Length: 603
Image (cartoon, rainbow, N blue to C red; front, side):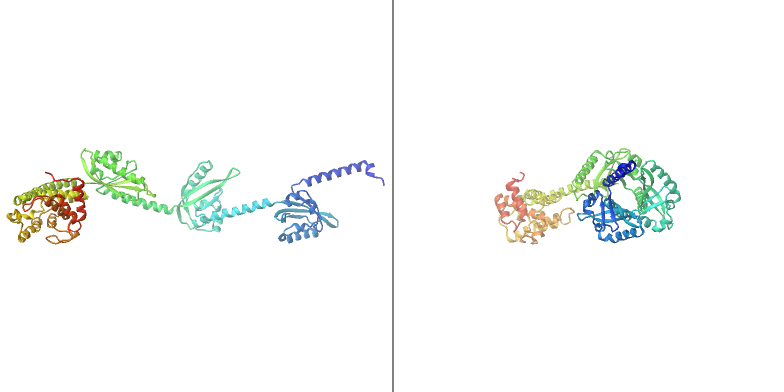
């Protein structure tokens, strides 16, 4: 049969155009980023575009002849079958739907597809399906939902009220703390969503001006407002706001509310407390002042006018250290330097305060003696941020102390003169022991000094040592100077001199226990001494020192009834009886003084 298309030019051109169109659409399908499938009326795949391999891992030829339902995940198959059946029965286009598809490697992909009937009257011949992989988009949507959920949870979890509003003052978003703070529910805010009603009338104008400032790009740290709750009560708050932008255009405001009711109460209490203590400070006789860490005055109480003659305003302009005399200034600087060094070393035993005797200069040029107590003012981290001082006028006390010292010195001289008279009287009655008391006192004082006793105890020991034999005034002179051995009765009389010395001195007014030291200087550590057989700690330390000094000097010196035994024998005696008759520490110190340090009596 003759091919008419070759002989009919019009048919030939139509055939060529059809072929070109077919090739054109085939090229489009094969290069499409979406998957194109052709299904027959049973859902069997009769064509698959090359892009199927990129999304599902199957080559186009692998899918031809397979049921499209085999690719759908089991849970989604019932829905796919229902859609497919409905399209067959009523010949409608398959509406876009989302199914999970099994990839060749076993993973799941999410695809969105829609189809068109291939109509072959009177029945459907099949469908052309356009399928798009939306796995990444779905994942992004899920991530966004999760992020929004977390944001919302965090938003609601915040204890600070946070809200968003448009420029008509309509509240578009609020967290749970907003409802709690304003004592309402989410439904209440939906019914009454305008923010102006939450402001007291006098604050609305302030808020409007702040919004304009924000829109002009000005940064506002926070503004104090009086806010009104839904129940009509009011409270003070700080509101912090910022502009919300969309496509670089302002669309609303975001704000946070800080309820400062408690802070206001604390501020009021602090102000009342400050006023109370300022009133107290302004009316006490002592001068209260505050210095910063550069030692500049920041406060001084009005009583400074009485103390120094200056008005408080004049003092605030003065340098604190220049109000002191040079010697007091040096003392204050030295003490403050010591305390600051302790602060730097983080010592935990820093004194809470220091009390210093300071001389201050008055406006008229005179000097006033003060007692000034200084302590640090510390911040919450216990770091010093200032110095609190309390100054008291002690001029009268200082004058009284000086008079007392003069009186004591006079008394000391009088006592010394009296003691010297006693010494002379004893030595007059017992010329053979001339110098014994003074020499014993010198050794006793040296021992006490080496032991590290206080100066007051050392002075008392020297005084008692100078008169420790004063009781011999009651003993007949012929017994004291007898050149031969004493009888038992005579020796008993000699032993009474310790008791007699106590009787002579017991009524003498003195800051030292002179009478007891004299009474005990012949007592011994083991109780074998006289006159009361005292033992160990029952004996005053001063008397224990005198006992050793008395024995050493007596044995080293001449007596009317014997020649000098010698210093070596004296040292052997106390060393042999150390801890038995004599205090062991006192003996140790005495031996060291004489043997190692070369102690000698003055000629």
